[in-house]
Length: 232
Length: 232
DNA sequence: AGCCATCTGTGGTACGTACCACTGGCGGTA
DNA sequence: TACCGCCAGTGGTACGTACCACAGATGGCT
Image (tube, rainbow over all chains, first blue to last red):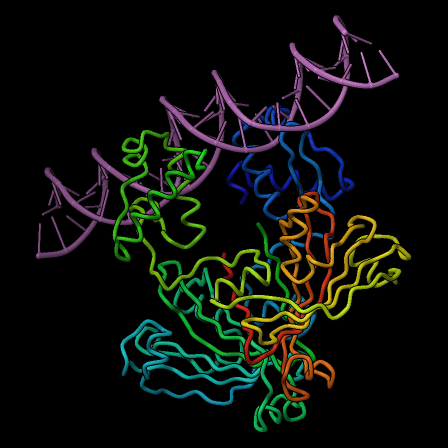
C-alpha cells in the first residue's frame, strides 16, 4: 500500500491541508520530522511533492504555508476515456476502420520504425454519452502488436494495450492546432461544415522510450476543451 | 553562476549525454559520486533532473541509460514573446486598446479580487515578423499595478512586470479551445471569416499563489501550434 | 544439458549530521 | 523615537552511512 514513508506522510499532510486555510502555516520541517518520527529528509520529500502539486509554498527563513486553492493540480497523462469519465460523461467508441498498411516515410519516422513496416490503422469515433466528440485515427506497429482483438477497439485502446501486452505509456508528446473540419468530418462529428475543431497530434512512449502509438484526434471545438497547468 | 553542485553536475552530465548514443550506459551513481567528488545524494539529484527532462532512464538493479532523443524536453512556462523567439520569429505587439474598467463578477473571480475593483484591460495584436498571429486581451488589477507605462505594452508584458514590479510568474493554468473567428477578429488577424483559431484562456500566478493576470488569446489556427509533453 | 540457489552490483529509500542563506524580531544605541 | 546590529529560527544544500528490492551472472547440483 503506502510502502514508502514519504508517501504516507504526504497523505497525512494533504489531509491536514484540506482542513486548513490559505496562508496558514504548517509545522516546520524539523517539527514534522520529530512528530511523525521520520528524518528531515523524508519530511522534505513529502513537502516537495505537495509543493509540486501547488498545495503549499515555502519561503526560506520564514516557513511553509498552504497555498491558495485556485491553483489546481498539474495535468496528468490521461486517456480519452479516463478524461471523459472524470468530466462525468460515459465514454464509448464506434469503430470506423481497422486495416493494415505499409508505413510510409512520415508514419515510419513518427513511430520510430523502418518504412515498409506493417502498421495498424484504426479510425474510431469517440463518443461521450453517445454523442460524437472526437474523430480519432491511431497508428501502431503490427509487428509489435500482431493480435489486435477488434472487440477491444470499442473501449479504451491504451487500457487494452496495458492489459493485453503489458505496455505502460509513461510519456506522450502532443501538438494542438485549430482547424476547420471538412465535409466528411463534419458529418461524423455532427457539426456544420467548416466548424472549428481541435486537432491533437499525439505520440505515446513506453518506459523504455520507444513509441507505442501515434495518432491524430479531431475534437469538436464546441464540446472539447484542453486544460493544462504549466509551472516554473 | 552554478552555485549548486547538483546543477553543475547536471550540466556536465548533460554535455556528456549529448555525445552519447541512446541506450548507452552512464556510470553508476556510486561511480559518479566518486569521480565528481560529490555525495551519492547529490549525484542522484542531478540524475533526477535529467530524468525529469527525459534525457535518461534508470532501471533498478541494472543501471542508468541515455534515453531516445525523440523524447523532447518538457514544456516550460514561456511567454508569447519568448515562445516566438525560440521558433525563429521576431515578436512584437500592436496596442489596440488600453483602458480601465471596474471588474464584473466574472473577471473579479478570475483575478481573485472584489467586484468593482479597477482593472486594466489591454488588447493587443501580437505579431511574428510583423505578421499578425494572436489577438490578445489581458486583465490585471490596477490597484496592484497602478503605473502601467504604455511604452512597455508593445513588448513582452510578463517581462515588463518582472522588471518593473518584481513579479515572477511561476505557474499558469490554461484552457485551450477551438473557435471560429468573427468578422472583426478575422480582419485583425488577416484571415477569412469563420477560420479556425485557438482560444487560449490563461491565468498566471506569482510565487505567493496570487493571480497576476488573466487573459484570452485568439491565435491563428494556420500559424500557431501548441505543443506539450505529458508524463507519469 | 538443464536447473536452481547464491552472490554481486545496481538503483531506491531512509537516516542523522552539518553548514549556509535568509527572515524577522529583539534589544541596544544614537 | 528612529535606527541598526545581533541572533534565533527557518528552509535549502550537501554529506556519509545503512539497508532494501531487484536483475543478472556465477557456479554447483541433479
